[in-house]
Image 1 (cartoon, rainbow, N blue to C red):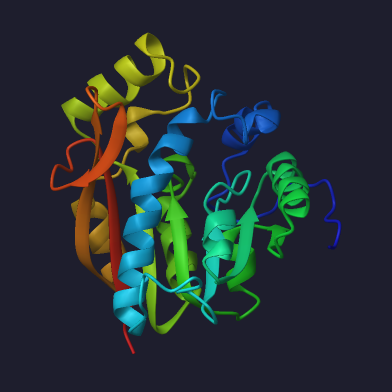
Image 2: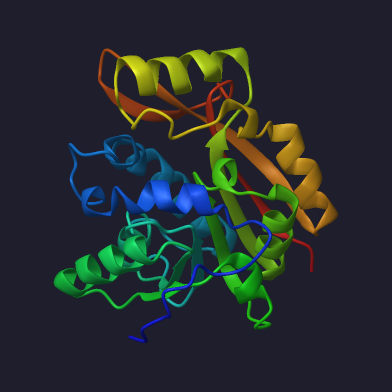
Length: 253
């Protein structure tokens, strides 16, 4: 694997303060009880949603051992590789990028220990889009609420989807409920994520996401909620999108 320089990747969407915040937590990525435990808990419904919709799009059987075999997939803002690794195990050819060097190194180390071939790169979405490369599927999971320029980020992300390919985004809605549950409860009371990890003003309403992506050729056709059940202590897909949601769509041919 190539070694990138130590400079932060360029691009209007790169938020250096956010990169520094995540860099301080780099050693925690693969600790189920660490700073990213909320993402570990979210992985099951997120992966189920992504796998099922990709299989439906490409006529695959979800019961197959490698249902995503042969599909090129880009994970933007991959962090330590929490989504990239299981998708690689499902057979996808995964490229995963992040603007944070510490996260990329943590991801590479863990993938190497796990025997997984994932192409990790320290680069921004804008810089990768300039390379004129496209993928069967592009993921932006828990990323859009952290970027400096949402429009630039979504434009670059959409450009990276091949015509007919799929796009996925998971984020937090900008509602009173998301402030109470996503910030007050998750950060200050339950401590699921470190305090200050999120800014409510940067949460993205589904209507805003849909409108921006439509202008860049991606038609969102499903929006599902990701809801926490305190009784089972588990996350599940639902129709409630007031707090966390995941959306998917297709690039125009």
